[in-house]
Every structure is written in structure tokens, then in C-alpha cells.
Amino acid sequence: MSQALSIGRFAPSPSGPLHFGSLLAAVASFLQAKHQGGKWLVRIEDIDPPREVAGASDTILQQLEHHGLLWDDTVIYQSNQLAHYFEILDHLKDQHLIYPCGCTRQRLNTLNGVYDAKCHTLNLSDENTSIRLSVNDSLKTIGLENDTVTFNDGIMGNYFQSLNQDAGDFVLRRRDGLISYQLAVVIDDHLQGITEIVRGADLLDSSPRQILLQQCLGYKTPYYAHIPLAVNNLGQKLSKQHHAKQLPKKNEQEQLWLALKWLQQKPPMELRKSPVEEVIKWGITHWDISKISGNTTEIIAPENLK
Ligand code: GLU
Image 1: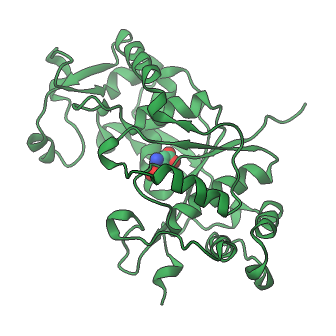
Image 2: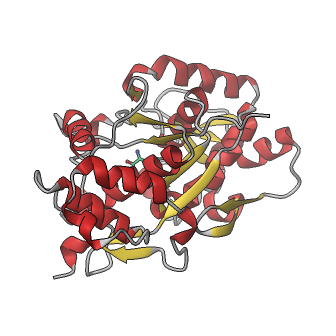
Image 3: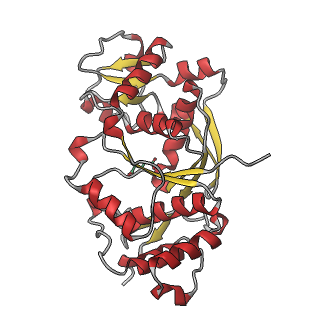
């Protein structure tokens, strides 16, 4: 019997150009799929216009190309998929799994990130409210008695989370009408047939919520692997907010080499000056995700080591 095709993806939000941290996720997801002879897709997660930076999507795609990270199939833009997300939301409504929430930001701020389901029984109208998934109703529908989701992460090992204690009823559509990351990501990973999700460890604790949604919608759960986060020397995640530097527009092969080194693949020294295509080829042949240690959730990015 032939093995199913492995399909990986990189799903950047266009909130700025790629930095070393996002390159790690791109390289790791690419090599994980390509090493298995699979496909690698790119999806631009542009459903949060307030966080979007003009031109960032194009810049990200150019940066990927310059690093030899060439995607298969057409790039998907989430902003083109909105009708579909709303359809799925209606479906969840028909199943009585979601409800409108009118709680103010001030009230939510007092709850330490875990919503207490205050609006669950209030029957509020859909207008000027956010829409939340009821964790308990979902668990009942899929026939689970307890609220602990467990999965075996390819890098971090066994991971579990109590949905009630650690997540609570979470938002699928925001009060401003925007669809949440959690809903869009689950729908698109399913539509694109993604079998392997390799991404940064900052999203590890989102996975149980995504697995719950997959089960509510009858979708398959993909393989997950979360790579340690690149941080600066203050221990802050490399992000625009913490002024992570955009990847330099030169020596792309060196950035790739550094990414391989930081992903604990031990690339040979002489590869550091080889053309991009050769570094990529070496990576595809030698990729071994089990070399990445999940003992640490953080690694200092090279640009911060000086
Ligand atoms: N769009 C998310 C980000 O840029 C990543 C989503 C994912 O990989 O699931 O952080």
C-alpha cells in the first residue's frame, strides 16, 4: 500500500517581513514535508487588517523565494475565504455549539484569559457581540467525558491541556466581526489537506483548542511538531513587537545554514558558503526532526548572540 502524501504548510500573518524566528518555522515545515517527498503549501493569514502591514505579504513571498523555499500549488489568502468561515460558523450554530458573548474588555481582563461562560445562557443577539465556542457543549457532542486534550507532539512530546481550566470557551468571531485565528486555521488546514503542522512553540497551547474544533467539525487531526522559539537575549520572542530585525537581503544561504544549525541538524561548515539550492538540497536529504530537542522551548537567535 502506498503511503499517503505528506502535506506541510507555512502560514505567516502579514504583520511584517520575515525575521529569523519565522524563517525557522518556514525551513522546518518545508524540510519536514520535502524530506518525505511531500508538498509544501503557503497560506497568508490576512484576516486581521488592523495588524497587517501594507506590502508585507509580497515581501514574505519574495523572502521565501530568495531562500529557495519554493511552494507547491497556489498561495491561499485567508481574506478570500471569509464566506466559507461564516458558513462553518452557521453550521456550528445549528449544532448549538456557539453563543454570543457581550462581555466588555474590562470584564475579560479580570478573568486571566480563561472565560467563565457568563453569557452562555443569556441568549444575547449576534450583534455587537463576539461568538464563542462552548467547550462543554462541544465535549458532549463529540462524546468526550473529560475535558483534557492530549496529543503527542513531534518535538515537545506528550502535551495535554484541560480545556476548561486552561482555555475556557474561546472566541471564533470577534466583536468587530473578524474571524478568529483558531477557526480560520482549522478550516484551512482541513481544506488544504494538511497532514503535518510544524510551527513555533508559541502556538503549542493553541493546538488543543484546534483539535477540539477539528473533532466538532469531523476533520482529521494532523501531526503536530512545535519548534523551540527564537528569542532575543532578554528572552523575548522574536517578533515585530520586540523589534526583531527583518532577514537581511543578502547571504540568504548563510541564513539558511544558521537556521539548519539552530534546528540542530549539524550542517557541515563548508555548506555555509554554498549556493541556496545546495543548502536546501542538503537540508532535504539530511532532515531529521528528532534531532530537535524539546527540552527547551527557547533558543537565542543568532542576530542576538553578539
Ligand atoms: N499565522 C500565524 C503566525 O504568523 C501562524 C499560524 C500557524 O502556523 O498555525 O503566527
